Length: 534
Image 1 (cartoon, rainbow, N blue to C red):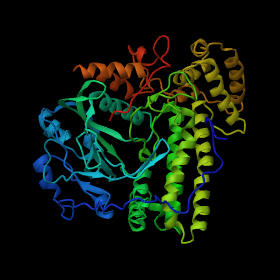
Image 2 (cartoon, rainbow, N blue to C red; image 1 turned 45 degrees about the vertical axis):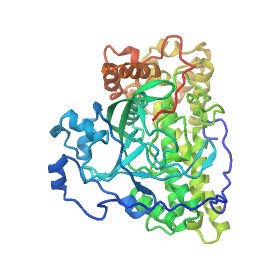
Image 3 (cartoon, rainbow, N blue to C red; image 1 turned 135 degrees about the vertical axis):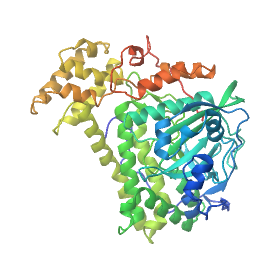
Image 4 (cartoon, rainbow, N blue to C red; image 1 turned 90 degrees about the vertical axis):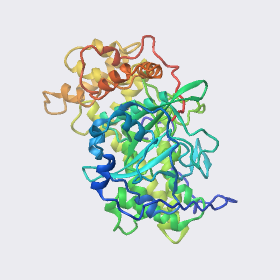
């Protein structure tokens, strides 16, 4: 059983078709102004110092996008700009002052060459299917081909109401916007596939949640915003042609190598499964809890997307939940691998009509493909754990060695991140930093003897401790430090935000004077709670 998880079903039953009885079919076809016309890149650059925005998804899959203008902001103010990412995307940010950047990244002033859309999707939310969700407070500005030739989505989040808002105000607050900025960029620095944060803009307005809060807009960048829920939106309507158009687009964009395979739609299930298995294994290595793994938050590309009630563990526990609304622990840390497979099964269901004309055969084929997730995940997880433990060869006992360490950490109340980091100190003869993390280190001592015996089975690796430090981070977004930065930003002080961003940009390198960013708060914070915000 791939660890660490609380429950891992042997099979995820698939239906022969994705049907939602009594559901009215909606015609969401959108007219995207200028979509069929190419604006010369040089003219666009002269006008707005922007890259060229394209709309291949809206063109390839009619009905997935609705033309929608952001509501903008009366007094936008630039809080943060990811200048390095902007350059990669082709933004000439240096040619624009902060006022112009704030106006663009809030959606207040967009050139005619940008035609924003809101995307339609459905989704299982905490296991319950909702046939029509969509971008309720997000506007996709368009697609950009970056300097490396990679197509990326650029999206505003918190930029106002859309046709999918369902009664919401379409806005976001400074706190949740900067939380996503901090954690998504930290994930990138840790080498975990993720959406990126390009800019954060304060809108100058007050929005009401539990109290009045300063409003903000996040600009995020993704390989795409295609989700399992995107496929569910069309499949639930029995729209096979649109489902096929979406699948063909996803294959061309993310998995072109399978386009010519004998059964590309079955291979799409396998490809998405491999990408998501690798992603979740990396979450587990880092002690990250996504918090809301609904199918509408499950990216086809295998990126971490939709940071809401997310956080990193301090004390290691498979039962860790941060989300205020996850009362049943559906998305607890230890449940993330099987939930990812459950989501993959929901994707496979939408593709049943495309996989084979015989529904029974299609279900069998798709079920086998979904079933491969567990073995792929185990391999990815174990490979990463070997690196974290400083093992550079493979032995059968490695699996048990790794899982026994996690059990020892949980029993001893040890910090997830620092346990792995201090393994390097142990190899250098400094045992107290690691032992001090455990309530009773007796079991740790016993485990460490087995670990060191395992290391002796390999050829001498003189820089093993250093190599392990390049795998095991010292800095993660510690929850109390994130909250400090957010509270200060709400009051207009961005210095704590800038400090935490500087530390998290180099998570493996010890920085003088930043010890408090590497440790949990005194007394722990096991009751830490996060909320959906952006």
